[in-house]
Image (cartoon, rainbow, N blue to C red; front, top):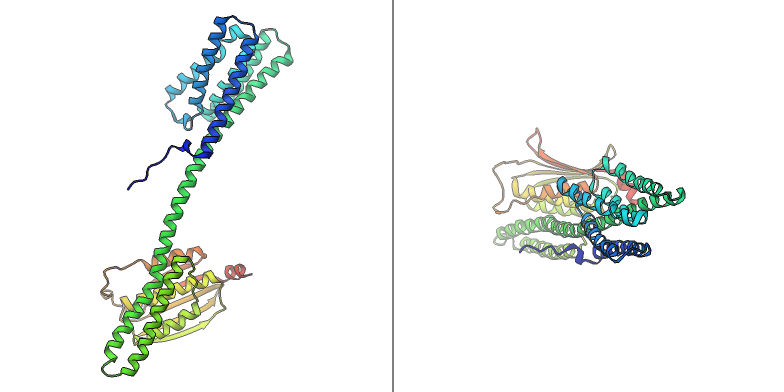
Length: 382
């Protein structure tokens, strides 16, 4: 079902920002109306002032709307031209006191014009009010004040309009971030289920087949193997609970011991070489997951008889290497789902600044190697 996108202005923050903009524009228009009344004009002139202010308010709201700069050029020229007429024509009646309306025009120019033209036209608007005031015989200080007020009004209109747009974009980005977080959590859950349960279920399947063969001839050993299956089943249940609660810590040292036991049960001669200092928890968990996935792939996709697991530090890197023989390209388990374990592990290693390499070596063995910088581990641990 497709989710509907609500009006952005229904949300509190964008609605508040737009409300502040409308209130500010309204206050400016009220001031302009009071100036018109103070000019002692007649009823017709006041009615004309009210109509002009209403039209200017509507135009300004249109220019202050998000994305106004992306409108067609002809549309922008027509609306800016109309606002310029409303800003300058009434000065014939109300003189320079009407000049604050040019501030609205200056703000609209900044909002709707290309950057190379916006600021020069903005400055020209302020200068035009200064010149008009001087031509009307006003004092220099008052003329400068009117010109500066025009520029200040333009900056206020521009700033508040951009604020509305930025708040809107931020609100939309927050919703997108929330959706991305949900997707990432789903991917995390799927990845952890694959990494944790794929190994355990492969172990259970392998040992169950072994028990099936041992029951007629070695029932005592079958009972011992059955105990291992029960222990692995309980561990799988604990893994599922850890995944659902986000507690995914694993130990590389423990996984090395478990992997050797599992491979031995599968009649794979296993040699383990370890010479390393315990990494930080995050790296420990990632490397343990690499080992699990490598052993799972070994059991599913090869007929291995020999396997080497080595953990060492070399050239400033903590290396985990799993290498096995018995590479048969056409061989794999009967599962309908091939999974994407190595892809998951690559993403995990990137998160700890590591890298993963996997492939067939010139000696016809398959090698998986994970490398993590030692220095970053020690830094994180300090």
